Length: 90
Image (cartoon, rainbow, N blue to C red):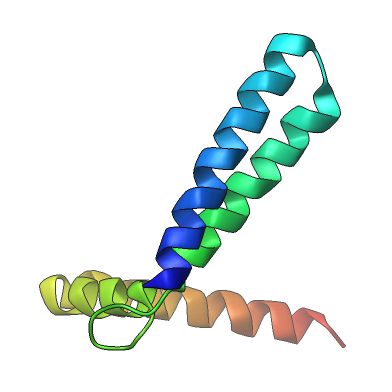
């Protein structure tokens, strides 16, 4: 729960920095804001949910239950892509 709150805080801070950087023309501040937003989104996605697992795991499980055929297709495509990548690295 704390990680999700910290993620939200980083996201808001990042938006403020990005907006301030855009308004003043400070590209460094603007970039720092974008980095903070990405960091916040990652923290929120990996924060433990109600069941103790990261929220992203819960969302993946729900997607797999709702759309088993799409999940199978996605896993197949990722498997083929991984196999193709590994075969190319000789």
